[in-house]
Image: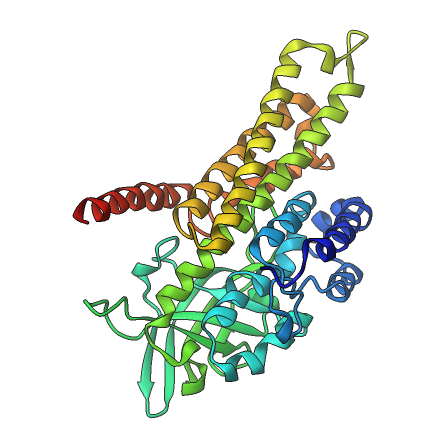
Length: 389
């Protein structure tokens, strides 16, 4: 049972939809040109509780479950993805590590401030030699008395330039029969030895900031070890990422819906030889393919979220949803540019931005290739377990 009833959730969803469409959509060009979310929009997002919508109510969040989270993500995907990125790590991959694996003391110290937006939490997993598969992690944490000393480098870390807290994954020992040896630590951004690199220059998603983060002799107390256990790290990463993949799938559906809406509006009004281009059958075929992808993706996301919340499928389904929906968005965005013709290649046109923004969704929180390995490997292992009785 969700902490928020469906009756109470309806006005929350309506409020978010109105905020996205009436306040954020008209300022997409401004966000793109400034490479930043305007401070007044950030303030409104804070006041609406968007920095903590997936954090439990006891810690000051709204307490939405994943079936409700994806409904909001459909809306966030409708506009510049930088908006969602601003509070996405607080609710998602970083915040959920604390919610699911943190000690009582860690939750009391951080969660309320994360939920209010006072603290921006950043998920520091990816490295130059370890991306979608955390098993290749090189960042190390060595015990020194009661403390831990962290050394290493992280790459492409979302919100790193504005983060107050890094959720850092580090290897405490080589992987062995007893586990992966990956632990996770809470490292305040102002800890000596933490250095954030310059902001990355990316193909798209302007306003969503990423950067390298270096950890040089970073000393944290024993209380910084999430869950008080060295072996919580890998499980925390996998659990947070699986949940995050369903959220990303929903974002992709929202972006595809926007690309479809822009395509239909353009096809209905732009003319060629005196006729609306939408009257041409080949253009209608493109719109049909877009619509079919959006409908299939939306249904897949909703079912996957239900199965995740019930515990019926927390691994294969999330990967399948992310794989299908992000690849679907790639096709829908490409068709949107095609429907617009040369106009679709112009910087001030929404489908041009969507086309660039969409490309990243097939890479982060596990590439499409990694999702295929998770799905295929999971199916085979399940069959082998059943056969073994």
